Length: 350
Ligand code: UDP
Image (cartoon, rainbow, N blue to C red; front, side, top):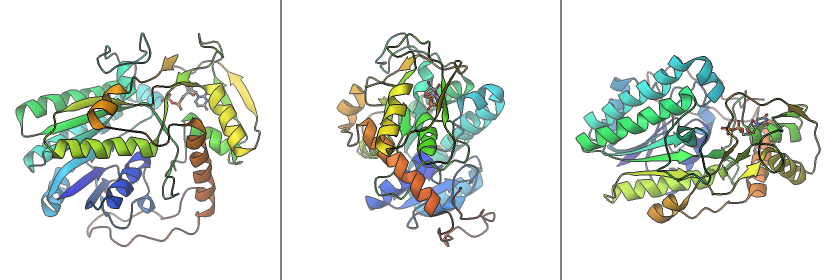
């Protein structure tokens, strides 16, 4: 029995791989390393450098390892990029997921956990937003994820397949043990950018829009710690393996913070100030998105451990320091499967 983690060299996927290894699971990571890093994958996991749409490699790995569950993170995640290049998002997210689901069905893998997103709701008419709210994505990114949810629903009705689709709100923070974190070289997400500003990696940051109908005029989001998020996946895995029903559930804390509150928290926790400039609204930003997180708590028994903005920010800040110091120190991995393409440098990004 083994768990296949797609995108397991990326931000959330690598936290998942560590969580599974800690739980004693056999873990097979499939990642083409277009955005992930081989050093982010725990040494106890096998890393297969491949595209998830490469059905020959994926199905061979499923059979070789006796995979009984797939946790699927691989995909593209930048909303403005999806607006500029929608067909790339439908290829990377929707079409590749279709191949992966088919590979699972063909290989007798009956449990599937999918990383969906709050972007399937678009701008919810009311917050907190429940899972039965209208699904009106406002970007190709959100649509590409919703289409995968629908494929899973239909495939699960037709085949021996159970699934959980977890709709993430704003994922942030880093592994409390300092083993992984958000490492992308061109981040767009607020807490990562603010952590870079606080640690001197960038001169400051811009606030996009101060005239929203919120108490301080800036957008409100529900920030969830990446370790709590992967815990929800682990509980979903246990539910599916025990024969539990399909589940589509929000993953957030049910509490919103404004952009200015986040920036204040980063400055306070870091003990450092940095310049902030105020700009016009960023295209496509919803005013406020906050989860109704009751379903995941009830159905999964999920009980978040890091539900605190300062804790999330503190872990994000520590990861920036770790990234900086490990830049020349990361060892090369040795257990990449034969025949895989050569790996890029094991150096962490600067
Ligand atoms: N934001 C900002 N400055 C930045 C990055 C983000 O003001 O440099 C704002 C963004 O406009 C949004 C909120 O922070 O209102 C959260 O954006 P993020 O990109 O982190 O996540 P999203 O909710 O778009 O997925």
